[in-house]
Length: 98
Image 1 (cartoon, rainbow, N blue to C red):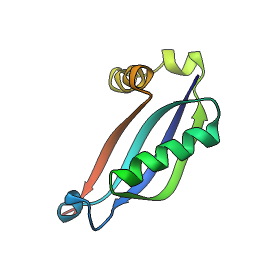
Image 2: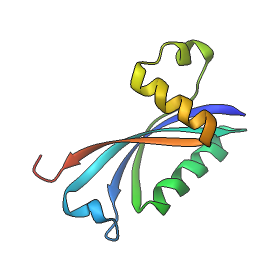
Image 3: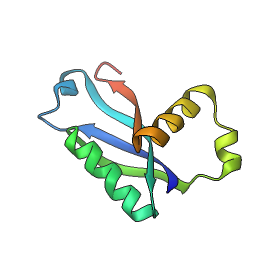
Image 4: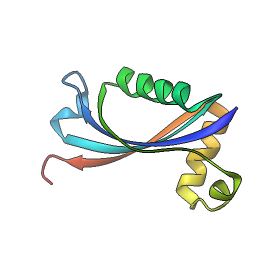
């Protein structure tokens, strides 16, 4: 399995309890998959099931070992979690007051 990294911009759907406080978010998501399209589909299903609407795909790539070795502590932790669980997402929120 390969490790794919995506950055999506998302907005909470009406059913998402965060909608009262969050207007949008950037999501960094790691997915283990055999190809990038399957990984993208998995990521989007994950976000949709968590009541987020994907508004834009900002970045997508197959991570090289050099890129993985250069990850910061937080991103490296996310990568490691995805290695064991198959997927991991980190949300960076824009609160409604911003």
